[in-house]
Length: 198
Image (cartoon, rainbow, N blue to C red):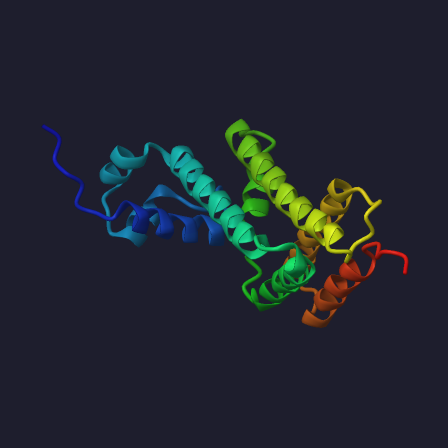
């Protein structure tokens, strides 16, 4: 009979995520994760498989948590949809400016490093991006129903534009853009959304 595991799996995944996030996939060794978690390498391999399998678990968890967080931020009634969209765009810009270590987003970082060679990472990143775009599209459609964004605009195309701007804010922040610059981009992104003709 297998012995029960004597560690908190989620805690180990959280610790591994911090190591991968800071060091990247290539720059993180299983020895580093074993040392950070206090587990032997045998226990890590036994519970999670190799480094690639462990990264897949971490990456999947992270993508899920990002989509869930955005879903919570954008969910609500039509009357508040534009306020939610604005708050979300400004929150991304503020969080990016506050990331003084310039670690960026693990979704973007993992995809940039691995998607070309790792189909599991590529598919998970694509699914997360599509989910984020769908959430933005739903909120923009709510803005349209409430008369805050022009009804004849394509909500899917506007969502793709907003998502591209948010990903761009994160990339520029990683490159050292100032908080003022990032806030200006957020403001401009919202300002260019088509308003109804009055």
